[in-house]
Length: 483
Image 1 (tube, rainbow, N blue to C red):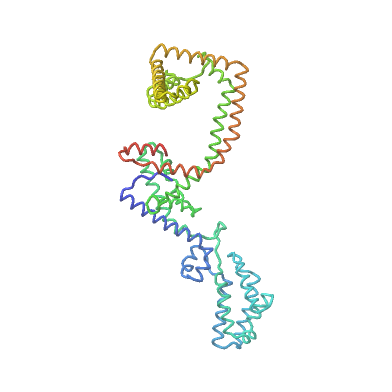
Image 2 (cartoon, one colour; image 1 turned 90 degrees about the vertical axis):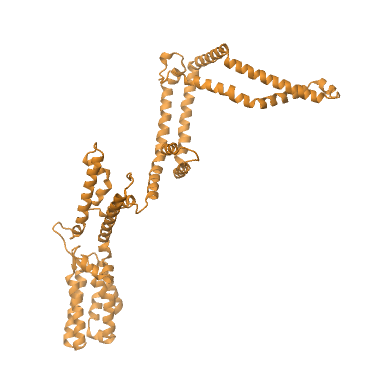
């Protein structure tokens, strides 16, 4: 869907007007699309519609079946004037027998794709007479002897109720010079197409004026969905721009549908995309190890290290310094009571294990003295240790010595790691480990329920709201970043 800018009241009414006109056009398109399949229903129940719309589709009464019904009507009129046994009626019945046989042989229903209707007519007539031959059934039905025996009114009512409705729906559809059926719906559709074409052109010029860098083609493609309104074929696809227009005009809320479509697209591609990204990263790490970049990284020779420094700062050392200061000045003072309690417990346990302590327990006040002594020792030890740590952290000489120790440790470790057998073994193990990650964990990623993940993402977004006293602009920034 395209982005929708806030609409002024005038623009909103214009969008609604055009959306309603487009909806009317879609209604006509769907009616035209369904007219042929539903014509039988219209013919029986709403004949006024077929009278008006048959010419649009090039439909006219079929001469053979129309003549058949006209002859039946003439028979009914003749019977009402001269009676069933008159010579005039016998002549009409003979003509109907001939027309019935001709209708069965020529099948005038075939051109309208209604051969099944003819089969219904034949079956009903065979059941009525009780014979297997449809021609014989019609010949018997249209005879003075049968109509006199079974009753004229009863049989002619059967024909009018059971046979006539099937014959009357048959039609003939004209063919054009291109060999296709005549279809003049384009005459009805043309005013709408012209209107939508002019509207699209005007909108394109307006978009081009708002975006000078756009060409006319880009401006037209900005509203690509409106092109469906101009196509003389695939007309039912006009439902796409009409739904979008109804949403823009605020006559229909398609936000849940858009969200579902977006989630469906993401769910379909997320699995494969996740596998591709993770496997590509792992392959790059494996390639780096195989090319010997691990050895160059362990080497202390700066000429061999292909590393880009963007700020002339050793980030690892800087992070280490921050962590040391945080631990020394912030963390240790907070945990000092707990450390003192642990030391006091250990001192008390050590004193109680001295053999002479059991002999001195008989002296009064010894337990209180022992507890006080343990507490003082624990406090003194803790204070001294903390002072030593602070002094080491603040002492330039101590800091230098600590740095030399770390440097020497890294040099010794790097030297030993660069030995051929050690480095080769580590590289092989790392490559095998990454291959196992691809085979095990990446496969698990593909089995993750993407719809569940998308639902969790949606919940996270809805939880982002403006808290009391929070800057709204910062919250909007967070929402944009999370989306």
